[in-house]
Image (cartoon, rainbow, N blue to C red):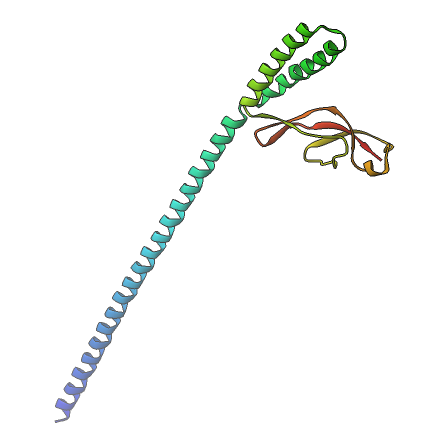
Length: 179
């Protein structure tokens, strides 16, 4: 009987070991499944990040392309400002000594030239004597004693008109400020 008892104990031990091995195998499969779910989640996250990064890239390049087209003629506009200034000075001088027909002819050419530049996005920066000095639009050439107390720290004279191309300042207004 003891032999039967030993055989029964051995059989029981083997059964327990097989059960443990089977449980371990099931646990390994669950771990593998969990790992594959985690991998799937990681890949999905990677995909979403990559997609978002690509969308940002598309938006950024579209914005850069738009800005390029807006400001592509900036150098040309800056060079044309000198001609615009010459027209303004010529009109001022012709008005002093010229006849009406000369003034009208030069004025007509000046207005046509100016309107073509305005159509391309050029805008003058409007500045009046007595306006506050703003470093975003004005460049102080010099500072003089204020002719009136209310002009201290304000614009006393405009030396050269400033211009913007769309919303970007391409030439600051040169001004004299009161001290």
